[in-house]
Image (tube, rainbow, N blue to C red; front, side):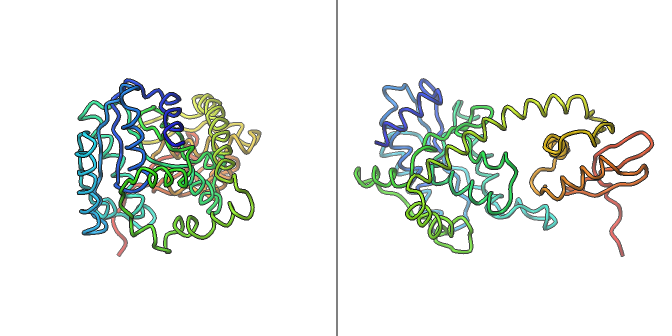
Length: 336
């Protein structure tokens, strides 16, 4: 039963006694999450606040979503906060390889808006309605596009700082729909979920049902288990990488000075993780692929003094008389 599953998540995530900002789009998943937390609020001393982010991407539909969420808050007796954002503005003026997709921009602004709402209202936790289906879709999409072992960790049940929690992550969408229909809940359908140009929609509508029906009826649980184990392994490995990074990298202004010795003797798995660590520390992580990491390792192991390579995010890895360093490419005048 969905309420029992969410009750277990409330205990597991330590939500009792906290103010919780519930991110509600008006769709099935977030509507069900709000209703279950509402049912559990009394015995768990939860004080709920509804947060809605209007991206304005679907015109009148977006306005109707906002109206529905305001009505839901009034019906349940919880306050509603709404923030309007413009994902298109986040993409303006950026080169194509640096420009986020519209969906990425919307997600960035959504989490930023929710964090601001939580800060303004004193909410200690932000609850989002990601489900076991979302987890499976995320892991499979990353696998098909190419990902590192860390990428197979999928969506965490809680963020590293514990602020964002996902009480529905072990619950299937079928369970959620059964709960909603049994209680005759009303929700909004997002028309963009039917657009086949989005890979996630194709996976959701055409591929996952076949895999679950013909290959493994417990597919969602299997992928969720894989993600959980992989996140635990990655967290343990990350402590080793941090320890090694502390002995090899020194921040010097906008540059990262890199210890040059022993890269050839280092295991590839550790060397790649250190290379990624360096890129993330210099502000680049989104566009990094295995090809870029292999180029970095080749240079760190055999690059000659006076040479350099360029990397995503307008970064430059160079070897000079003083050693190896990673930092920004100087922005010179435009070519004629």
